[in-house]
Length: 267
Image (cartoon, rainbow, N blue to C red):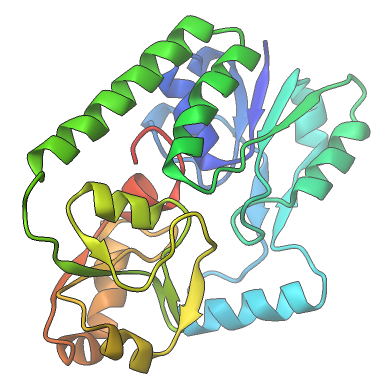
């Protein structure tokens, strides 16, 4: 089977399932595992590079309000790769090529290709997508094994924090403007022994005011700018350092791409 992965999380999942040799194309953001980055890049962002967080947010809002795409899909390259399966998502309109655009492009391919969309909102749904993708890609045993491994890892964490005091935690997916982490992030905080003071499990990430953050009185702030690695997250956190310091909370900048933003096997 020849697979085109149009979401970094599905690329990670496919490689974790041992299906890396079946992946023929990925997105420009697919960087894990390292060998995935060397595959053909099927997408590119139309947002100018080098913008600040606030400028990125403004550009995204302007294009979405005008009904314009945030990403471009290289249809000629996709056709040349002759995929049997195209994996995409529809859960986040600013994270990847839109689902409708992918379906339309698949319909124009010389050879038919199935489009599979992975759209989890909760941690359970993320885990459920592992065997679902594995089954479709012809590796059901690998799917069962990876799912079991992920479940055991989560259980190990919950056992380790059982009975501990629950610190008040705020998860910030963007800092200008503030976005509060949603979807699976509040569950991750709870399983890790915290109490999310702003996010709602299974619900979309949302904007918030600094006054909302102050009123929530977090003891821990996790800065996880969506799509950013540790260095970028740290830089963005330092830019907001004065306001964050005023909260009197412990602040941690983390690798959001690896461990929070992407609904894949590294959550």
